[in-house]
View 1: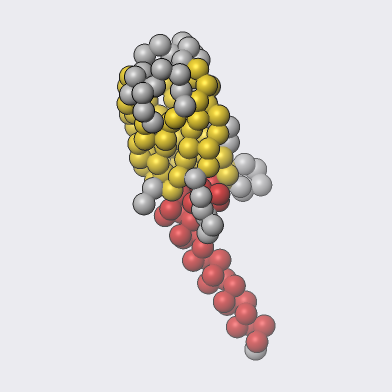
View 2: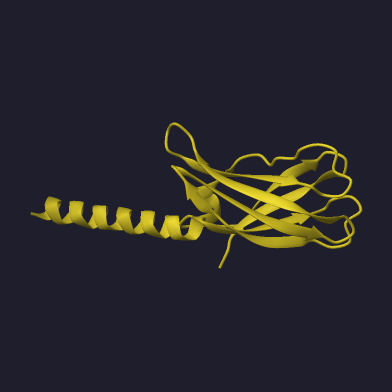
Length: 137
């Protein structure tokens, strides 16, 4: 009887965590900082839509001192079922090539103990800065 009750509690807790994870993970805030020639940090919220097992969101961003471009945020799962974010920046004035962040574990950004996560971002033609992804509130 006690084992049955514990199993129910674990299943309910797991399902609740999964539901909260899904709701928190599909809207993120992207902040770009420390780029050469920028005069202030730039932030924007990105709403992601499911595309099969993964999700994708695109929005514009204006970086003071550089100009406006596009941010694409991908939420992808690997073969073992672990989700991670990856951001791509494009169409900025002076940008001569692509840019893509390292993978950022989704459970760090929007899990039970979420926190902002920063990674280096190399925008070809502009320089190296920092990209931070946080759960949008």
